[in-house]
Image (cartoon, rainbow, N blue to C red; front, side):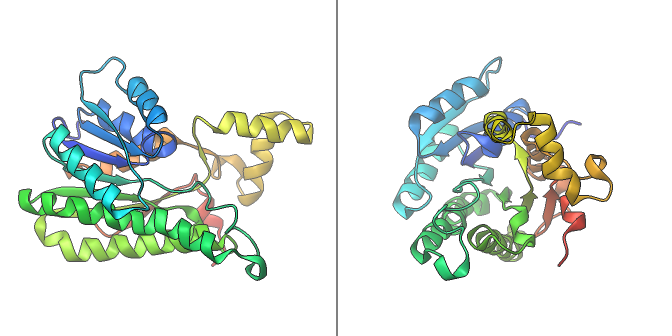
Length: 272
């Protein structure tokens, strides 16, 4: 399907690895010029070199910190100048699975860690949106995709769940306020997702348990689903990216303020 994105300009927060990098790759395949942004400039440059293989599309690595407003504003301004505009914003920056100091039982929860994690993901996404929205309003077109997470629909992970629920609320608030300017804002709920770091992590766990990585994957996901891996499975980052990039196109112009789960069916079996 031709998504008619050729020539568009995108800013991908959290684009140095994981789902952000996967989304940047698919955007580039669709002819989009992309700025990938994260803290680690070396990792960003490596990601940019990997993404730009066999393409003439422009890829700009930009170091920034979503936890700092001045850093965000400077990065967005720089990206706008380098790319010649910003049509698309992907908010994928976060501490993976939340701060370790915040993912604890309530009686031992580190409040400062929780607040810091919230600042990086939720407030960081708000900062990025506020910085790009004037450009989108001026041109009368824009797409924002926020990467939340399935913890928003589960109990237990206090930091991951809270920040993800808040990001969905932000999604609907932005969609309501800026829809009249031709701006669509949507949210994706990934579940457990295979990225470049997954094989090593699963192999380490499997060795400890004395089983193969394939057996470990079945143990992790099959019990969550009455239909086993036919429904509930580990999703590849490319699958999440395909949905995100569709939401960046006019093919999805009727969708705004919505959340789409890309969790391999796991959400179908969550008890609310």
